[in-house]
Length: 136
Image (cartoon, rainbow, N blue to C red; front, side, top):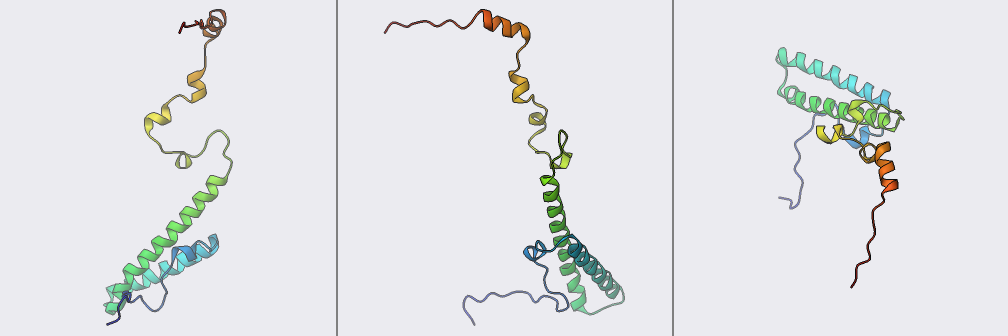
């Protein structure tokens, strides 16, 4: 018995585990290529499952599905980052806007809330707030 040893479940031999930090270094085309490879492998494994393949192949299905999810997650995150960097002008796509709450999103902006009518501006100008000297 080795103290402090880390016991890991054995991963399938044909494809090493896809790590998110490694996927982030890849560009869009490489990610899509990896995704295609994983999807073809998954379809082959599903065929093996139906035809009564080895137990190791059946165990690998979950592993490949998780890898596909990992690739898609990284792909979508990088795509969203690229879109966030883009200057959208007045209207930003809804999925890139700040979520907050529905009430906050519908609230008046600070500028709108602090705006005064012409009548109020005149009233403030002609009748300023009086200042009183208080005797100590």
